Length: 226
Image 1: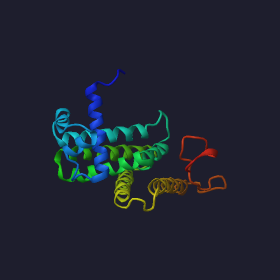
Image 2: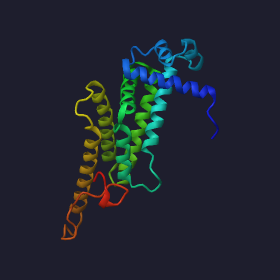
Image 3: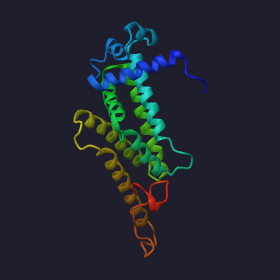
Image 4: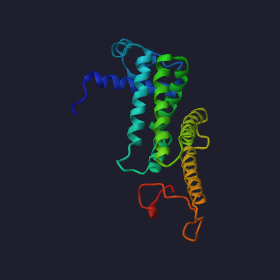
């Protein structure tokens, strides 16, 4: 790929300035003037690169989503349960100042989505995409369509709620979200294993004692979360 153009670089600089403003003061005070001041440029330059404030906000939505998708990306052949764990880590295991800033920016964008048809449409499309993606992943694990949809909705809702909780009460129960969601995924996996044994006409045997399945792609002996 070639080097980004000067226009692309400037748009990215302004988008990241918006992220910092949202994380610091919230969406109500994230004006074009505030973004320009954060970036150290004149407001006219922001207007030159973006049609309006909604254009700037939706550009940030897509930038944050790009980071999430990159963090969640798994090589071909990755087991479905590991895909679920990677999704959780990419969504809520946001570490350091950069991670906290991204989380607060997401929450501000969710708030804006409720009142802005344009921003709301982009955000809702991403949430719907994740619900459908997770639904398909659960179906690959053998869940029925209805059960897969319910589980996917629960995971997405917990991710959104975790980000809001962290933004409203910073420092409270630090780091709770990712471990708790990993525990939920493992519990569902163990329950599914129990159901499979219960449905076996031969019944449980000495060699079929239910146990939580190994969910990660790496060797079980060195598994970090199962």
